[in-house]
Length: 509
Figure 1 (tube, rainbow, N blue to C red):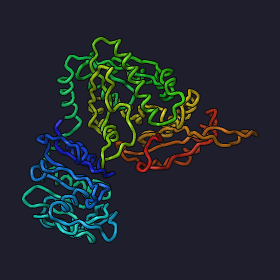
Figure 2 (figure 1 turned 180 degrees about the horizontal axis):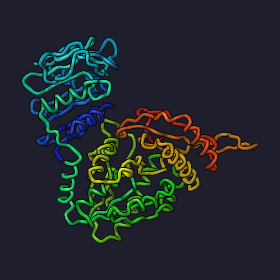
Figure 3 (figure 1 turned 135 degrees about the vertical axis):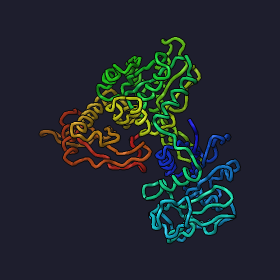
Figure 4 (figure 1 turned 45 degrees about the horizontal axis):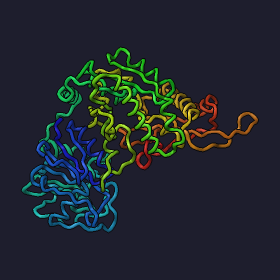
């Protein structure tokens, strides 16, 4: 895979959006922490410096070594990146009189400037900073202004370095994608060759070379990621791929058998392993979310270790890890903080002598679906909502018991079946139910009840990095709430989660 574009992360909430916009241009890009990026930059065609919650004037501000980039590769500084280039290159950055946050409009654009081809004056941009550039760096030329910001954009003569104080990646910057295209395609001349067909062709070739005649074991979940990973691997190594679907006791209602049936006819070698009792036994009494995730990850690996010993000479474990898993599991000073650990990120213990192969590691969820379509996978399967690796364990707040799992499975089934019957399932990116660790007073018949509360969650998103709650019809919510309370013993109250990501996450744990 050609690297093409390197994005340096300084901790901005928008860094992943920059990557999304670049990928939409059919250009491959990667995000690295500002203080830990590749030493070999020979395969990169351009670099983007992202935003940051820090001020460049602060003592603990991120301070990258750009000696291998500056003047050698086309570079675009965004917000903090623009201020960083100014502050440390002969310019001046000072605190703004008022915080410049929100919509602004370009009031001046330098004529005949390639960066602004196709962008008209008064174009709306999105500002998000408390500092402002008061003087340009050495050899810099002003390219654009807003009514409040004189140096909204500039370039440095003698090198292919551009800088903007606004965020082109967010929806509110109406011509933001055009500006990124102008910089990457027209100025940096980065090839637009990152397409699903190209990815499949390159990845299958890469897998053939990496794996050779080795045997690979893969954990199937029935979800999009593991399915696409399996089909890619199957194209590369055929019969040497051994798929195992583990029932961890925390799947959706009847999902274990349904998933096994789903894979019939796909040509995959799939074995089902029912280890529900083993997982639930290990989880007994554990309430902490991270401990639950790590326990499930450990037992999952133990089950795979047991099963892999039944297959002679297995050398690799394949996983359906995707890019948001990788990003959310990285934590360094400054860049995006660790939100949660992912059970399929971080390697294997030494005792399990398997190497890891992750064919989807660099793809966002929507890209995985497009690759799956290219591979000819059933659209119904590709349209399945994401489901967390730890399963219902992170939708049961508090400790886990078989009784709680049964309640949540029944509630979830009513909710998901309802979405499908009302024609709402495909309008939602992800949906599920959460069992809360509280009881509430209710009345059924003439008797007082004191039973469980469940929350319903439905969000719309592109790749899970950000998400908005879905405005489901009141009539639907009324019907599904009534069905849950009437059909699921032990539940007497249903609430609907109307928080978005950020600040909330999609899952509750």
